[in-house]
Image (cartoon, rainbow, N blue to C red; front, side, top):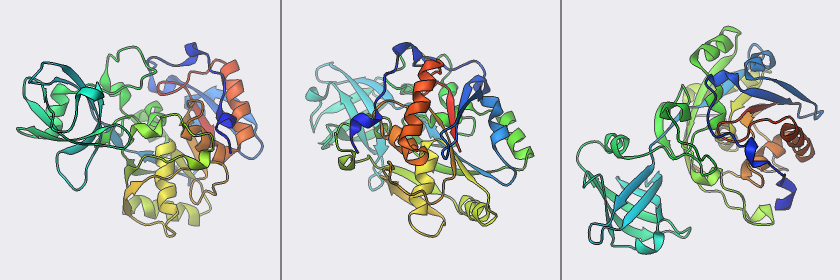
Length: 342
């Protein structure tokens, strides 16, 4: 398939710059993946599309304040880091993006917070990033909470008054550099209401990397390579998914990250506890092993996320729905409205 098949015109004013005051106050478009029929609702109507015995899968990752501003002690030059992922094999060693990259070569030392945190640049990556090793006193994430900033996507130009609005209410495990945004619509009260209807909730973890949101750059999408992200499927969630399927009910994923996690495990054969790195790329032609329905936000043109929802609902159905979303002035991207594909 060609990249331009996933392109559409999006007026800039439809890109949501801030979250709504109430998490559940967003709009909701429904899309029937079999008929292509759409409906326009409020997010609070989602519960009407969930049935007793269904299982909702949530990604409980937590966004870290991954943007750091520092300086080179020898020259005083300002440097910006964006943490991407920690190296499993080497504690305190991270892959980062650096600006300005040309001045930060292997061997460079960068200081943050007047020396509270320092980084030695060890190597460069093929994608233009850097491998760095941090030094500090105390606990790394506590130092990061003091010095780091929330890494909002580049299409959001306004400052966030409350950093917790870029976290889901069920966020738990630190490690993402971007929020699993479909989960931002939920409150604890609304989740309790869903459970009271007889819908069960399971949790997975996928630490979201920047590669998830970047537009695909190759014309032939078969040549696209996804960045790898760390995931965890606990045994309790695996058991819940198996029971749901055995009872003929639906596995409903909240967000493309939960979907990719579940499908990564599904591709192994038996649904069982699993963790590791995944670079699964889902695009039209993919046969879903586990996921029956998906709640998701509205995505960037030409992105791998557009390709994933097109694999689930059909490219023509998705493109028609997006035309309608633009026409109906839905809010797009991280702080925008939601779509439920069922």
